[in-house]
Length: 385
Image 1 (cartoon, one colour):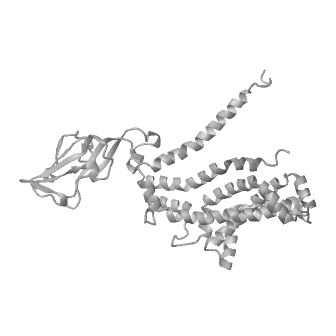
Image 2: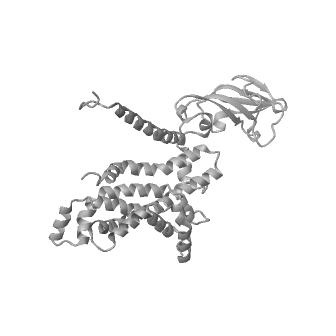
Image 3: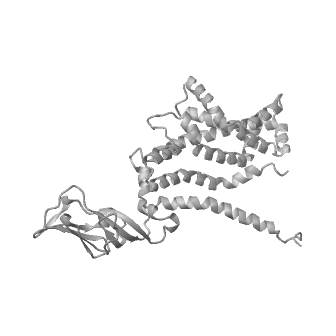
């Protein structure tokens, strides 16, 4: 009965489940990165992104105000304030236990008073208000440490994005790297498309000696490893003076992207209706006119398909940028290289790393979702006559 028209094979459900599984495998890390980019460092350390919407119990190390801010009430010297506000922590948190030593972080409950000897007496309330008092004047440059166990409600912030996108710090800021990446990616996407479109038309519709050999050469270049050609190409660029700037990386991406571009566009163009081309030639149109007015508009799905691939490759590229953008000052640093630098300099700041990573993938996601319908049409073109 499985072969009766209208009935579904059991294999269909397996395919659907497999697709759902693949989508979830791709979606979960992306959603997790997005959520983490809006969380504070304390929340990232204390719980996973899937718990971001719930109240979490966190162990925090906070400090009272410095002795320089003490006041005097009769014979007592007093330092008071709110432990959360003084440390720029979540002011909506509620303290369930606290302590004055790392070996006993839950010795006291809110409202208790801890006798710290010569350092005075400290009282901490559930909302974070505290009072530190002593019979002698407080000394030193830093406040007393307080180990707090608190129930913290969800806390989302835009401070991570402000720091990454608008910070003047060359260490944290991705703004310069963002525009550098656009400077690399846009020409490295447009140049090979323009060249490959002309070449693909010639290989598809123009008759000349050696055309079959050229097609075979294009197919053969598809399997040339990128890593094999990097150093010889860099030496050539350095000899002619273009190995330390954008021109060198544009040409490198163009050379490595051309074989696939020519192959993809040629297969699409050769599948266009022959009658249209022949009628245009009968009417006296030149090859250039046929290419620009007929073939190029009809080939838009294939052009968009390759543009997506090339844009994603160049945007996410690190190896070619490392080799051909030799700049010790960081003026031409791209986003992938900036994230590597962040891993080295700010390896403990996961909120900064998550935000920088999501900023890096946001543009490719927008490009992909905006043009994904053309991707399918371009890849399937020519498969059915």
